[in-house]
Length: 330
Image 1 (tube, rainbow, N blue to C red):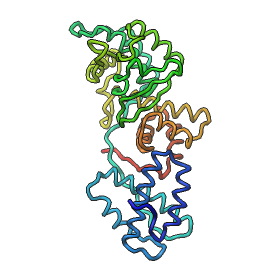
Image 2 (image 1 turned 60 degrees about the horizontal axis):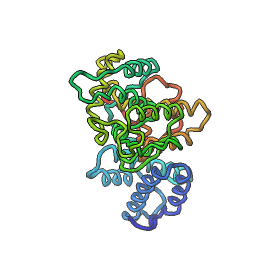
Image 3 (image 1 turned 180 degrees about the vertical axis):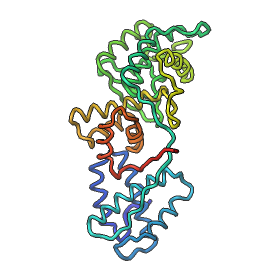
């Protein structure tokens, strides 16, 4: 990519980027800037000589960027450039504004209700491993593991890779070293969870072993597998009365990852009710969850059922044209 903007709109684009930098998280801005610079290079390459962007120009640009990339990526590029074009239009320039692409997304997360959580924890707290299971400590592990997923919004892969040395009891932080994006991240936890963690480590005999896994399998230096946790959770879920057969055709039913979705929606809802602005809340939540961009966080919030309808409406008003419309297969 070139080191400077070159098109006839270079000054206007530079001003737009300055303004957007103040509004977006650093990671989201990086993606946004990349797309805008590519668009500037395109305008320069076609020798655009007048400060006007007509429909054929936009159609040709979309055709060129669509080669070899997914429809989701194309949709993201279009939405970013829509913001630029709307900015230029507001400043008196004639620009064709392309429509958004409806990206098909068949996944509808299950949001756990309060009664679901109460039932799940109750069953987990009395859970005993099937007779054939060698890991008898699973009776201790599942109650804590499910609480981490629900209270901290961790991915299952992040949770099972936590070692005792990754827990900062003094600052009440998890240091996540094995993440989806391979980026270390800090996740805080409250004093109640801190007390449970401490007692758990004492009971498991791992408190003073920094290299021991928090959720071991057959020995403390091997962590439990995600598949094993999933199998145990299915037993707990069924006993808790959550029947996945009753879910909508676009949903996968209640699963471990749905704890993360529930955490995201509840956190946003709590911030809204506390009077925290959406522009502060969403980027913070995105960083907390370890998302690369606000697109990922938007999916967690936008397609989350009817349990937090008022909150989701407020999120829609915040997101506006920033995010692509995602439809479901009918």
